[in-house]
Image (cartoon, rainbow, N blue to C red; front, side, top):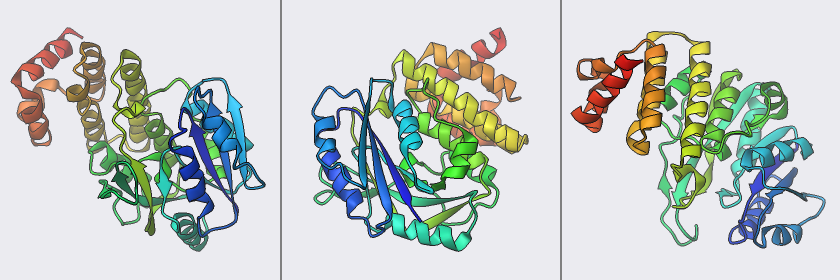
Length: 313
């Protein structure tokens, strides 16, 4: 069963050689590597081209963003199973083989296999790897349960943990090329939402590089707008699967977690309107058990500010 490893690349000359070599050392041999250079201005493309072979294919596009690069990589791929990988991250050498074996055992094209994830800084061989808040080892036969748990911040997931059949991805559609922040969250919420279930594979892991300058840590206006759009789609996926109080409450929590991160009046106003649309009153934060933690984190001053926005709308 052929696996396509899809790697978007932008100014990754420090990492791309090691990432390619890491994939080539996978214990599963029936694979291809599709790399799309997103208009790099450094030596990334030249370095990647040195690895070009029957297994490694390198393409180039003008700078359109990682989502566009992933869409092109998928278009060029031929594998039955798809593994996304960022240009500065690694996979444990057994990850693909272990997930193929579990996928074969399940024998369901709509099933998704997930792995663990470890954070590292610098050289993965010389650093201490810290486990992320990864998925539960239990099987989610109701995908909405996993999405609600993610909204409640029980787990942190990342695009490289997933292992998906191309037919499911084709049905879901491509990455949203308008997004710059949380594009992976928006995409995989849609994927998980159309899956038949999510299985956890304990025998492999992703090594995720913790880089302070990464796009996921940007809080520009463009990033804030991207996060708002992504969160709106993600919460629509959740409530489309289950329009219950617990599902809507989880979606509210998803909006709330970025209020303290962004410190943006624009985000606060938009998020508060969405909270109202989901049927919750910002003033209940003081009373509702579900939001006592949020209230203690945000503080009285910010809660009052959000309350004014809520009633103004």
